[in-house]
Image 1 (cartoon, rainbow, N blue to C red):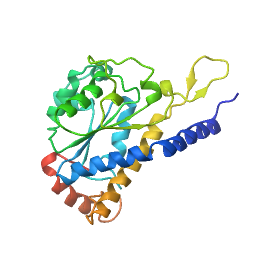
Image 2: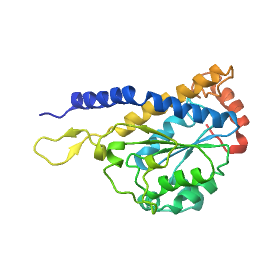
Image 3: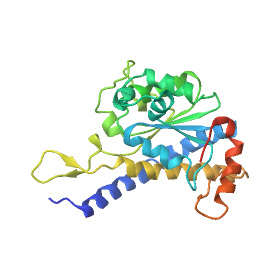
Image 4: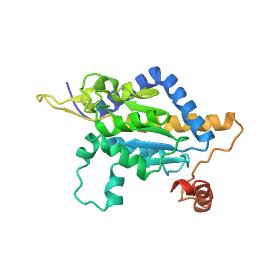
Length: 248
């Protein structure tokens, strides 16, 4: 038994291959739902707490990404309300947090939500899913079924995220989001969900763009602000969604 860089590459590569084998159909279904919302004039909100926030950062406001995609996070509450020393863990576990986020982001009936939660058990993401469901807003969940099916829900309904969403994409990450045994110790090391999440985020983006092309429409894609003409291109795209507070 050993631990090191080679083992990390092997473990994460195996998970990527499992996602590719098992989740392509779900990603296609998710892209269909998301493109439908965009075609109605809506935007895609992407929520993730803790390290799951990285998924949203991978999809929102970046080169090669779609413009009408908006990052939603617990940090938004602290920024808007001027709170310091905020306990994000408590916010993530509190189902009432979801309603505060939906209000401040002015979520509309034509929108869609991608909710990312590795455990799929906490109050805020699960209430976001349920409230979206009540409003007829499609919900795409990115979660670890292995973890979620082995954990109790912290939402008052007792439901977990995969039981709420319209489409579930399993990130195929193991329980506890750790991938390597440490010789001689009970603890494990190395996390996979952020890396796998980035792959899923980029895959979803590409699938949605493919649907724009199939519909003979120009996909609203940002380009790097560090190439000539990037700022001008992106400002023009942002103008189309200025009323939804989209930024680059």
